[in-house]
Image (cartoon, rainbow, N blue to C red; front, side, top):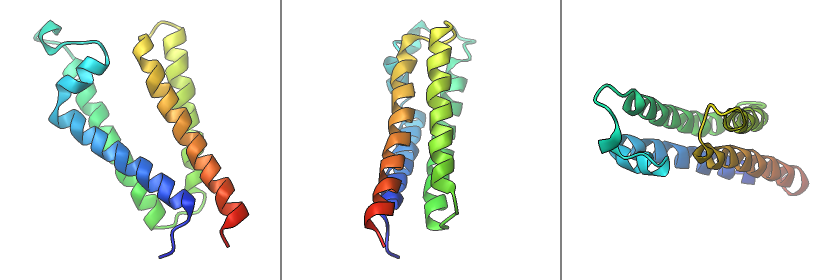
Length: 131
């Protein structure tokens, strides 16, 4: 199988998401510290561990979908990823702007936007340079 630059970008993003999700399950304290939370500051009945755990499971799932989508050569999959990542980027920014999420969500918005941009640039490269 000959891989195009956009295939490589999507697989790398998928693998990174998968492994970051796995790390979130293995070491939730690292997630907490990124958000400025300590596990000891959480009340016993806090929903934060469950929410962060579900986010980690989602990252694993999405990482698998990215890789599977490239391997199956789904038509328009990469265009969908660009759209979905931009929705997430804007969604995170809106949540921060309206006060429903802390400023710590801005890097998540940047991650989603950057991923969309990387995929878009790789698709552009494919059209111009890959036959």
